[in-house]
Length: 303
Ligand SMILES: *[C@@H]1O[C@H](CO)[C@@H](O)[C@H](O)[C@H]1NC(C)=O
Ligand SMILES: *[C@@H]1O[C@H](CO)[C@@H](O)[C@H](O)[C@H]1NC(C)=O
Ligand SMILES: *[C@@H]1O[C@H](CO)[C@@H](O)[C@H](O)[C@H]1NC(C)=O
Image (tube, rainbow, N blue to C red; front, side, top):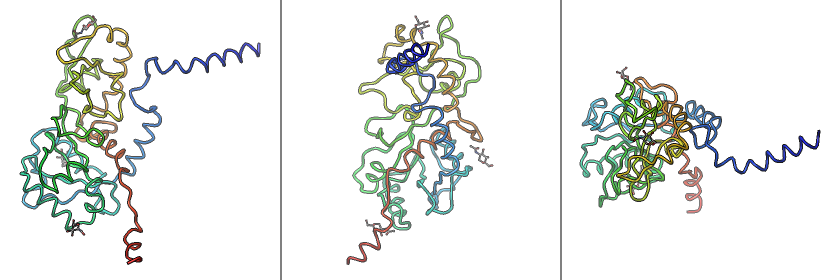
């Protein structure tokens, strides 16, 4: 009897190496427990310092161009993530209007470089900014530093040369949909990645993402959610790969429903929703730069 149990356990542990190919049971890249632990740490500790907005623009009248940017901005302003004490901050938010000219943008960066010690410390790497369309390449030192070093929050589908996958983020689109989506046939329901996706996912639809040349690297929450298990990726032009779909249909639907709470925008924000998940992604990026606090006194000492 004992032998049998041992053998059974042995077989179980041997077969565990095959488990990786089985459908995943949670929508996260880590375990749900680990995700929630980190998320709660973020909620309680994350602090962001926002530079005073350009004095020529009224704080609440920033022209962001898109509703989703304004919603993120307003959510951040109302949130407890903001601190008035920059020395407590993990990251620095640099707000500017989406209509700003390169020259004004450069001038604003010069100003925060002169007025605060934080930009020079990392050349902007612990800073973030909102720009739906992304910053184009410019021959300006300030703008180059912003674009290369700071975390850009932009919109899907990002333009060529305006998105740096290892640091930049995209906002999930706002869903205005409240009625069930018409299903594609039988009980299958697909929704194109983009507007209305979050709500459709909540109702059990699976997003379809058109894969562009070079793959997809600019979807929302790519470092949080296991999109591979939640969405169907198709080459542009081909709308439906029924083989891929049939095999994973039920699991994908379930994960889509579970993951959809992260894609939902709320006013005011709710736990685990789109706003808070963006904050979580920023929190994951807070350690990109470490400071040598002793650096200044040390160099002074050897001089
Ligand atoms: C940051 O460095 C620039 C030179 O690159 C300098 O002009 C500026 O005064 C420095 N800012 C601070 C706050 O020390
Ligand atoms: C894709 O194919 C599956 C299986 O043939 C079908 O059930 C589904 O309705 C199709 N979806 C779309 C969007 O055409
Ligand atoms: C932020 O607070 C203002 C004033 O209370 C309110 O009008 C606005 O809707 C809030 N924004 C969000 C996203 O909750």
